[in-house]
Every structure is written in C-alpha cells, then in structure tokens.
Amino acid sequence: MLVVVAIIGLIAAISYPSAAAGIESARLISATDSVAVFLNGAVNRVERRQQPIELTISPRENRLTMYSNEPGFTRELKMPDGIAIEAILPAVQEDAEDARRLLLLPGATVPGIGIQLGNRRGLHRIVRLDPMTGFPRVESVTKE
Image 1 (cartoon, helix red, strand yellow):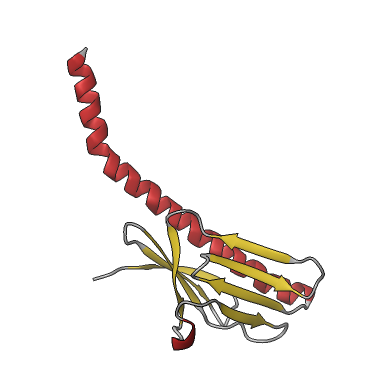
Image 2 (cartoon, rainbow, N blue to C red):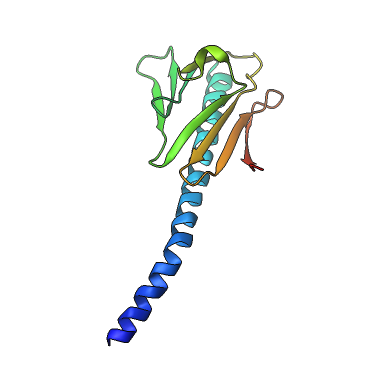
C-alpha cells in the first residue's frame, strides 16, 4: 500500500508542472477572447446605436471599461488572476502606466490599437483592432 501511494505521489509531482502550464495557457486564451469580444461589442454598439463610446484601457487596474452617453450604460472587463495587461500598442510615452482613453465615433475609423496580455509563465498574446474592418484579431507573441 505504501509503495502504491508513493508511486501515485511521484506521478502527480511529475505531471503537476505541465498541468499547471496548460491551465495558465487556457486562462490566457480565454482572457484574450474576452478582450476581443469586449472590443467587438464596443465597435458594434457605436455602429448599431450610432452613439459615441469612450473605451478606457487601464493596465494599472488591469481592466477595460466602456462608457456611453446613454444613462446608466457602463461595461467593465476585469482580467482574471494571473493575467495582466502588459502594454497598449502603439506605445505612447506619456501613458506608459496610466489608462489610455479612446473615443469611438459613429462613421469614423476604428483606432488601430493593440492590447498585449501576458501571464506569469511568460506567455503573451495581443488583441488588435483592425482599422480597416473594425474587427479585433488575436495574435500569439513569440519571444526569441
């Protein structure tokens, strides 16, 4: 019985790092998909309701917020534990740590921004708003 328990413990100890890495990777993928859906929702709201939207991206607070002039309309997306907003692209010197505010206007071009997310294991993904189509796309980042 002691040998069986020792073997099970050894197998669990060996497989734990790869299982944890898989969970962290899935969490990052889920967070980037959530950011893409959030950005797509902002663009859709601007075009369908013909209302301007203020989009605030705050790396310090690790969240995205959407405001409208419609009374009571506010949407917020908080990043899950272990996932951080690392950068807002293109980088602007003045707001490296502060929140960046974008104004989305009906009939106007969508700003070509990117939001880089990362996890504790060093994996990174970028969600970019395409200024031509207005749709977000997700890119994997490989560090060399």
